[in-house]
Length: 439
Ligand SMILES: NC(=O)c1ccc[n+]([C@@H]2O[C@H](COP(=O)([O-])OP(=O)(O)OC[C@H]3O[C@@H](n4cnc5c(N)ncnc54)[C@H](O)[C@@H]3O)[C@@H](O)[C@H]2O)c1
Image (cartoon, rainbow, N blue to C red; front, top):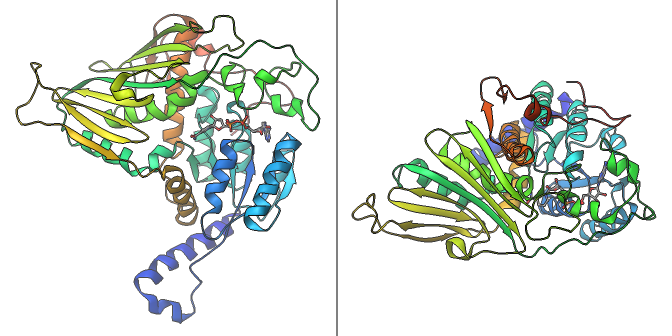
């Protein structure tokens, strides 16, 4: 979006807000309340399309373009948009062409993790605002650069951690920040991906018709097509993503840190492995624990694949804050508090708080918040700093896992302390012609 258009939309939004308070302004011939926002989707298969569907529920949001390197996905999703809106968007296979379209105000990035940074920074450069899927960057270096680009180009960026717009999560944090649980020394965040089976090893095969696989691989190493490493299951391969830790981890760990209001760990250790399916095709661990030490409290990340687990009343994912007087548990369904009863820290009169159910509208509220922020130029609920810090945090867990030892983080220097090996894993090599954008 050009700066002129940004200013125009912001002025319209300001007038719209004033009109709702002083309706007579409307009669004074001011700009109408409903400036249209035009979006484009890059990466249309699963989450990208869910995001777009949510955007299209909003009044005055239109989708002018869709882009995917898999023609089959692109045609299928475009037909669904046409059915929904009556209009077929323009279709592209190269996101750079999308960014040349002057009428597009914002792009939604729903590509795999290794393809977030370059389109996001190019979009910011092109003056578009960005709704970018999580984890924000594929490496710590990418996250840092994406923050820099956001500031340089004054881009409104919403990261896809939609729990940040979901009221019951925020209520739970409010309760914690009021100090209700007494001192908290232990926080657990977990994801038990019970539905997931092992992925059998399969041979490489010819690239399916309609797929530009070289573009799908982009900056990552060239290799023959293998369906295991493609749509959706790319997340189990280090070349493109970071397994459950970087997938579910960013959602849950974000709230672990938000709840504690502390963000800089002192050290990280992690262990685990392919304990469930040692011989299957996944590279990332099906079982992993990571401990982040903050000096006076610790955060434990715990994931498994193929088991739902029965911890914390059969919640397969969640965050638990274990305080002196009780434990607060929050997940996508709601939050509750269970009082300590017989321990030395139990507090008289402190009783259970029954489940406070969520509305299930987190994603819709998150996309709406982004559209509002495009107009007001305010920071979205999950702005770039939040998305970057938690992506860095989960990458730290994976770096400790891959090195098989404890690593120490220097919060001032923003690097691992005297650790060339760990610092090397904060970056990636880019396959030509792609390179890390210069900001
Ligand atoms: N916020 C959430 O709750 C949530 C949930 C699921 C996934 N995600 C995130 O969304 C992202 C996508 O995950 P998914 O499961 O939808 O993946 P997916 O593999 O199903 O879809 C990704 C799509 O991007 C396309 N693509 C790849 N490279 C491209 C390029 N250079 N240009 C255009 N299109 C390209 C692929 O062809 C595919 O259609 C991931 O980063 C994931 O972590 C977020």
